[in-house]
Length: 105
Image: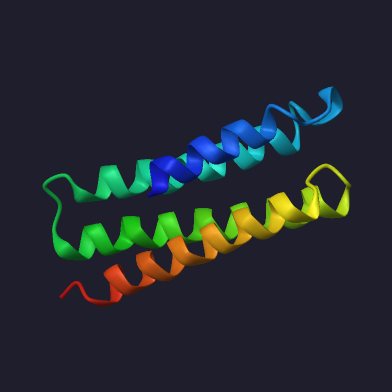
């Protein structure tokens, strides 16, 4: 799910104007990629405590994505329909990550 979300963000930022390609677009893509990458890094042979720490990083990256989506919408770069779909998806992903983190002993 995190990889799919990152792919959706990549499709979105390809439509950004050139003056945002190296500002908001890069920040948004890095944050979206960081969600999946932290899950992967934390899940490889780590202790449960270490995995929970990396899930926390993923959650924070998800919150960063939310902030970027709001900035994009406010700047008129992200249209409302795209915003609502991407916001609902990241909200769902964050809830699932929080649930996973809370259920690791």
